[in-house]
Amino acid sequence: MTIRRHRRWIAVNALIEVLHIGTRRGLIPGFIVKGGFALEFRFRTEARASRDVDVVVPLKAEDILDAFIQVLRIDWSGFTFAIKDIPERHEHSYRMEVIAQYQGREWSTFELELVFAEIIGHDLVEPLDLSAYGLLMPMDIPCMTIVEQVAQKVHAVSDPAENRPRGLIDIYLCIQRIPPDLVELRGACIRIFAERGKHQWPPEIAMRDGWPEILAALIVRSKLDLTIDDVLHGVQSLVADLAANPDADDALLSNSLDV
Image 1 (tube, rainbow, N blue to C red):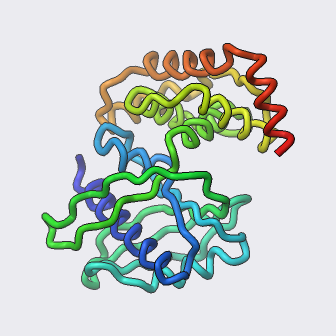
Image 2: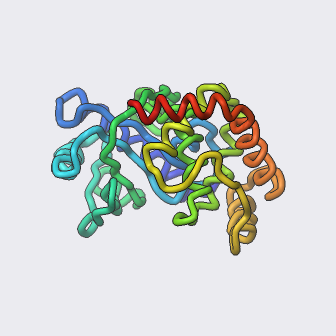
């Protein structure tokens, strides 16, 4: 693992401790980590290296940024944080660059996606053991459940309006290392496709122009023991298994729309 990636892991784990403190102080109602960094915390070096950190906080869009700025005024075990430049507003999030400093000196800089959305359950993931570095021992990390994360990524990699080839690797790693309950996952997929209403369930999982090159480079850079064919066929097989019972899909779709 590169030193840069290692430093980023430590910085993000410290940021999560700051979020824990902010939650205890009532500055935010709670949070979870999702996306590629949630998988890095779960699978460590067996996950792809993520470019950014995705944090979900269940607050309204007009409240979340001010609350997050208040949280970033908290320090933890020598770490402090600041936002670089002005955050970019997106449809469901703010995107920003966060600078982590340790004892007043720059330690790491990373992209952060601050998502305003409801939290549907979470898993507690063991943190890094930072005591070896003379830091305090962190708390467990609340991460999006594997079922919810896989369902969201199945939607993203199949959305014609999106360009998310990295999600194929994430889905494959999840189902290989923590095989989800197919009935539960089917329900989550049906709900997400119905809520977002962008394209139909079940989706087509196919390789697009430029994706093989991106995936090949990512596999090499992250030193993952898999091939592009492994990833594509694994995700295609998953969706085929999930779509194998159309009657169940119709019932789940009806329930999702009723809710």
